[in-house]
Length: 364
Ligand code: URA
Ligand code: ZN
Image 1 (cartoon, rainbow, N blue to C red):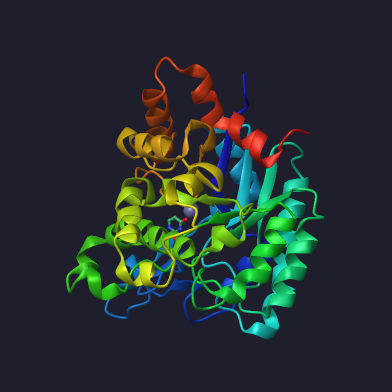
Image 2: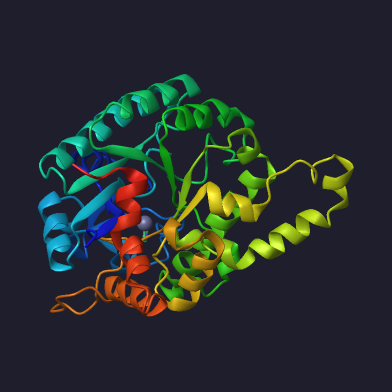
């Protein structure tokens, strides 16, 4: 039997917690006077709105966000053999350029050390100092490729500040391709808060997390495609969070809009291009963090069962009942996999872990 591998699971390692606790603007961690015993993690755009009561700003943050023993306990409880941990959003995107390079080194070393405490059980996606210059970023990619437990990098959608279709990212993509490092592409910024409307604060985090995150991912990947990233870097591999946002569902429409666009045709951009279906099947991997068979089946059809990887998004989406033992969010993903692959045990085992072991070389 293949091991069960969680490739979408986050930590805020000690060095990053220090950073969050030292800050007073988003992102930060602090205690509020009306809830003195619980720290709150304030990370998403708009979560800091003074009109919101402090007890509903952000989310409570306990040791499950930074104590690696709790990650292992969670893995044991949910029968997860190996995890590829990644720094959670918003990574180092907000740091001044002159601080980012050194912080990336410290945090990546911190996470590598945490992985070393559990040989064979923990690996990680590193973090890049994206606010720094490309030489510093490339240097960290090269350094990461020498760290024993590193298996790629986690990246938000902002790139160097103007998105992942920025040609200035080419040296970064070139280094990632050269060192065979997978990009784990993960959302953070969502959509402009105006689209959530004037009653958004009545709806908790549902709109930014259920809509903003997946659409942000979909737009970021589509911009990469339109700018020809995968025509220039045919060996660049990207693992998309949340089963690609809405990419599998919208791929046909994206392709059709490209083929019917007069501007693209006039500029010769509809010829000699790799189409979205080819890229979905050769450069893109999708996680299976989509909570239902409907989304999962779209992901299977778009990229193939051998490119789909189980994940949990731990420590986000914990059960809300204080006495719950198992996480409903995790079980929803397990159930969707078992239903979608009913009678196809080999494929299910691939998604649960075999694919991750093969793609990320997790044998040791
Ligand atoms: N919320 C976040 O901010 N990040 C995640 O990864 C999941 C939920
Ligand atoms: Zn996540």
